Length: 430
Image (cartoon, rainbow, N blue to C red; front, side, top):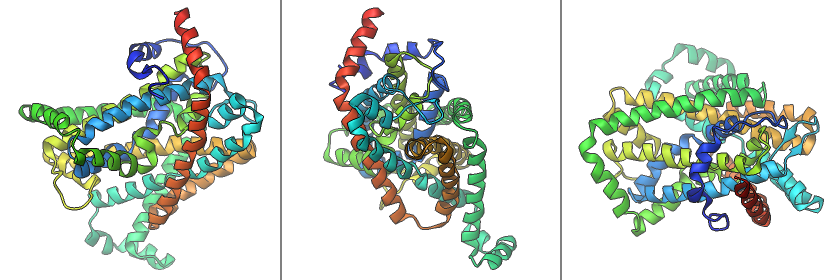
């Protein structure tokens, strides 16, 4: 998509930044383009941007970060196509409200005979956007930082609850934490897309800003070592170890379900951007392509610099969040607690947006009046996934998430000519 778009992520980046400041008076939508971008970034900026980067460095060395930058550039081009087509082939739900996503792009752009492919995406999307990894890993991270096995085992309150429901103290703690997560998420997602977008537009700049300040502190206090870190990233970018680590860290382990960390080519971004009030497909595409530059570009780079300055990536086995926690604890007084707060924000923001993605898929299949049942089921799974061992479940979820990419990429490639024509018309007018 990078070459088919004429390297749009490089050539049109200034136009994308400028597009953020433009206003659209179109009423055919539910949220603004900027809110759509914030909601998409809220979904993609998650545990993968911290634990995934740490795993990539452990497996591939500093050179893996170079390939994350390449991934961001390619992903921006794919997101551009998704944004353009989301507006160009915007659909309507059974309630008459404008909606977007690969299912509408396929049905409206390729024709009704392609509807089975749209249904294929929607089915995979309902399962692929369940936050299995987020709920489970957030619980694990919280327990590792704020509790001790001895403290949990000896808790009288947990023992009392556990005896009543036949669970040990550790599973009771997980149950209570999972219920807490579900309650917080429900307060946002049950209000619909407007509440999700409003929270995301506040939470995303705040959490990325706090994270930037934390890494800036680490850079300033280790300023003499920064040139050596940058030199290592480029010097090790093309050796075999870096290439394998980049592939493993970005595509498999580093937020495995997040498809190269930024969801490019999966189709979820077009669901959110299709709900925007923008009436210009190319402008929406320009705004959409900024997403990978924030998550795969900025946030992953911040993580990598902090870990290379203060962390130990020469460890036995494959480790992620633990390496990051130790690095921030070394680089900042109380840094592990500050990082944990950021991790909580990252994980929750992902859950907000992913609930909307899954609900839109359910609404396409079963209608708006039945989609609410999916939302309640989504909230319930957060409690379940916080408790149970999830190796098999995560693998199944990853499979469905990968299946989402098949119809999405078929549609993007088949309609890429429409995108090129729209780009020529847009910039000729400019």
